Image 1: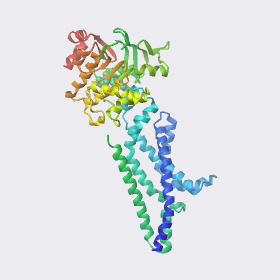
Image 2: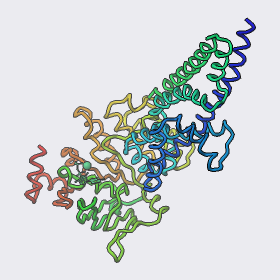
Image 3: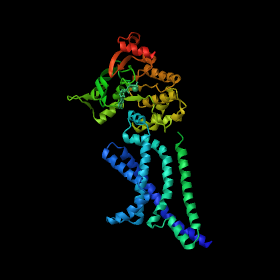
Image 4: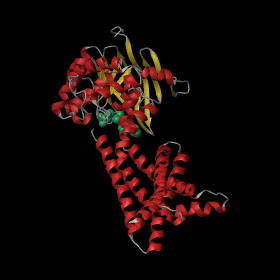
Amino acid sequence: MDKLLDTVLQMLEGSQITLEIFCVTLVLALPLGMLVALGRLSPVRPLSRLLELYIWLMRGTPLMLQLLFVYFALPMVGIRLPDIVAALLAFTLNYAAYFAEIFRAGISSVPKGQYEAAKTLGMSYPLTMRRIIFPQVFRIVLPPVSNETINLVKDTSLVYILAMNDLLRVARTIVQREFDMTPFFIAAVFYLVMTAALTWGFKKLEAHYGKY
Amino acid sequence: MANTENELMLRMHGIKKAFGDNEVLKGIDLTVACGEVLAIIGPSGSGKSTLLRCINRLEEIDGGSIEIEGEFLAVTNEAGEAEYVGAKKSRELLSRMGMVFQQFNLFPHMTVLENLLEAPIHVKGLKREEVLPVAQELLAKVGLTGRENSYPSELSGGQQQRVAIARALAMKPDIMLFDEPTSALDPELTGEVLKTMKELAAERMTMVVVTHEMAFAREAASHVIFMEGGHIVEQGEPQAFFTNPREERTRAFLQNML
Ligand SMILES: Nc1ncnc2c1ncn2[C@@H]1O[C@H](COP(=O)(O)OP(=O)(O)OP(=O)(O)O)[C@@H](O)[C@H]1O
Ligand SMILES: [Mg+2]
């Protein structure tokens, strides 16, 4: 029993890295994704094209490769980042690209008539975006954002290859040392609980904003 | 309304507008006096919507001038290009106009009441308590008392369009622009919207109405314009216009509409 408790405690420590990567990535990538989406939609061609390239790179290559790149390639050109910062950088850049595409699709799906109605009522562009467009976009993007968020929970395990002691790595270390599979089950439960909680939370949000 | 009957509300002169090399308006002149209802009719693609949208700057003209209550919104310079007044003046002039769209364009995430309150509160900066009675009164006027807390999706098309009219009126415009307000409605629902518009006309609201409803144009309009191919083909008082059109093309069009 003591052994199990000890295992759980070690794994809880590992889960902190996992949670940290999850939370920080989300907090940074969501607003960054929105900015990128607005830039993609802006009439300034060079900006829009540049961001298109960025999105293409981020979505067209594996996150694993991007992690390795930030982790190994940046130091070669003299940029040294602490492990966790390198991981967060890669995750944020990657997820911002996915969120940007979701937001762009969401913003584009609001009919032109909404902008025109707002304009004829004297609403400025920022006011229109804030009061009319974003609330509608929010509802449209909830399901895909929910999907990506749940993917992120599982993607955090990729930092495993950076020798960071996240939940999965801790689990494997114990399994190798003790010849006991329990840590894998505990890890599975942890991921399941987290995705279940997120699924439930997003369902609530969707129900709340689905009233119209 | 402070303006006297024959005071000019809107004057457009030599309006030209092209999309790429598609010349849509080829020099349109029109005037609308205070309290007048101008009906614009014509076949599809003749430029009716474009003309209407030029009035409130949803489209910008390439040439000509637009004058609202004696003040210029746009003029043509010596080089022959249309020039708009400064942003502040433009905003002020445009705030005197309200618009009703074919597709209603209500804000779907807001209740009926919120749709009406949105602009008075967030654009004019009025207090909710000040606007609330106005909004209630407008809803009563369009026959939708009791639907304050409904979402647009819970209303019929006719009800939605009446909310859209009330929403535009909540900003207390001097001119109301309508772009085929009943074209998206089932025939049995057009009547209620046209009734609301006739009541507005009876209150001497100045209106410019693009419509396919000839009966409405005949009954409610003070002046009718028939457009085709970016030109005004014929215009006049509805009585004369409908009973005895001069132009062959007008006759053909009217025959088709019946
Ligand atoms: N935003 C736009 N970009 C390019 N072309 C346009 C645009 N809006 C209108 N047009 C073109 O201008 C012409 C006139 O269109 P408009 O919508 O003013 O006609 P309309 O008389 O309102 O027709 P309808 O009765 O079908 O509404 C059409 O050939 C149309 O394709
Ligand atoms: Mg039209």
